[in-house]
Length: 83
Image (cartoon, rainbow, N blue to C red; front, side):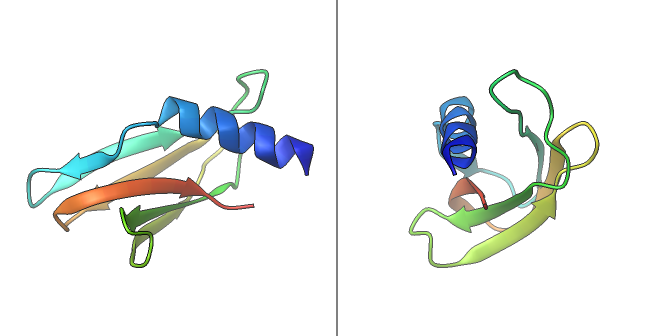
């Protein structure tokens, strides 16, 4: 449980700013790492609207800890790491 909260803290620190989709097509990647900055494979990452009610996209990290997103929705969004 402590590991999860540490990972979540690191993740939030790395992505402390909201993602603002300016275009109709926005491509970006998120890298999930542990305390030793090693990539975490198979982590679930959700991209939600800033109010956290509407799910925009979900992704699973690859072997390098990378989750890729292609967003077709405009608005303020937050990336969330799920336990």
